[in-house]
Image (cartoon, rainbow, N blue to C red):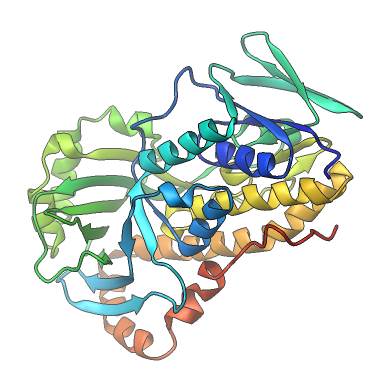
Length: 398
């Protein structure tokens, strides 16, 4: 049984409650502290949970409550709508699921409520004091909480990361703005079990048919100026839609999808960001999890999946490794190589999304040959999607 009995988890998004659920299963009482006054119901865009993420969510009892749209294959097209390549799912694995972030958040929060995980709102972390016996979190409202360990699940702009290492890197802009919406337009012959990636002349667009009617889409627009979500939303949706319609005016099916989207339907997500390699994941009794430690671009399709994997692995390490420092070192050893490999792959994908008309045309010519020869689903996705965590297996200290 773990010598760690209590944990203060900073951040009430998705990684924080999942971490608390995993810790509770490991016999550790965890309380989640969220900076905002209210929960995040209804907030956020669309995301994909890959098979490896679904498995990690299953460990903490969340997967059964998900109601995403299964995606069995992915297809790539050029700006004229011509198929460049297609990848099916991996044998023996469930399909990935696309869903609103708010739906995943709700499923996680409801599971936390059912299992007795407590979330305290309006607690913005201001500092922390460590002793050999524990760590005390200091909040902006003047309150203090002491626990055996403090876990930073507070996102890409993590306060805990700065407390662990004041010289730690911050997020880096990927050169792309993110948008998403639902269009009334339908793409002929598009299958509801397939996600399509269209490399247009000026910008990238992904889409999938929504059962019933219409099409969900997201776009990555090359943009020199880094804008936060708040800054991007300061520009009216109608203005962004004019820009997007202009960029996709010559693309199939982007042109029609944008025409079928009302200005007020647009989700403006701001700049896509990545987190450079974080040198220190832990110090003393403080440790990072999720986007606070590793935040690959959303182009990876693995952000949420990696976060919940790390939450489960951290809980296993604290369950089985008596020394806190050794537990954190073991956790980092289990996770760092994997998450940094995913981040590097996503960075290459981002460069393809903003490669310009000439390079896009060359890619369109070469991709069909590549998908028939060396770009096979197992080689491309097997190492990420087949990752499984054996909860019951004992963890060996690093």
